[in-house]
Image (cartoon, rainbow, N blue to C red; front, side, top):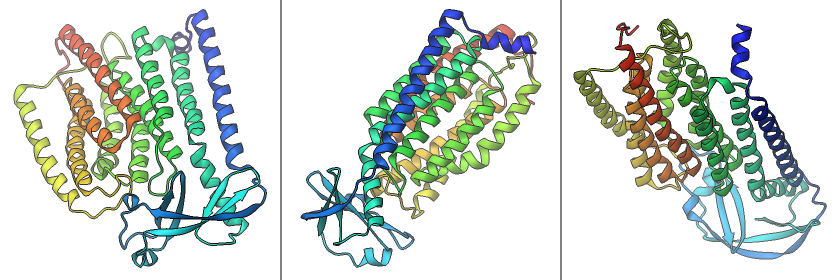
Length: 408
């Protein structure tokens, strides 16, 4: 067993040295970014002094609250300056003004903070300063987070070098490099009181885990289900933070987590006769495919209609009701295809790759409508690896003539 493990983690000496150097550079860059970011956010800004007033205009586009809302954040803007004021729902209901007088206070280090009242306390000033600097240094934190996820990616390839082909390693690292670049270029805005830095971390972690899981599935490795459990936990966290895609969240919680465990057990029972690392795979018959498609259509209509009638509030989509309804139906369809996909994977069926194509397309539409550009890189990874996996599974089935007929 020890020799077998060593065979997976001992890359070529030259390649090993290069990868070690790359990981060291990533560690230095990551630590440097986080140090700069935290230093700025928690810097001592000294004293504050009054520096006049500014008339700001209320931004109605970011508001969408109802009686269930406990805190209603209202943004006021003037040129490059902005101020966020938190109200209770009762206060928000009585708020009828479109402008507000903001009191500007300058800190000793030259930053300007805005308040809706005079003489703020030092605690209020500290909170306002940290919130302001967190937004200002978001690119720095995103860069550090990107390097962290890229470090995990390079480390995975390094420690398990012999487990992947050159193509697989190149594909994996290419997708992750693209994801980190997009994360820096297109930072995420805060939503539902959660800072955009946290949202970006979840996006990049989701991309890393999904790409690794996809790669392991294409290799017919049962260990993909262990990674998949982490994928489900991350995606549930994203749905909760953004307060959207509740069909997917419910499917993930009540279907994907249990099916991952059951699939691992089932795949372990159907190891390939020639290699313990491979799982024997199969394909569906024509009439079975028709039944699956029919079930997906019914699921989409029923679940989409039910969820579109729920009054769930989120500021992630800017209060656009038509957009929310469209995403609800697309999400319902994606969740239905996802369920079929999960069953295909459980039964080791090649058609799971076709389901991956459909899921990737539907989720790409959702990501574009929602402005989640980092997750589009993940879908690019889906499309490319799905083709790779379909070819590998088809070749295996042809060569082995589906000698293992049992689904369980």
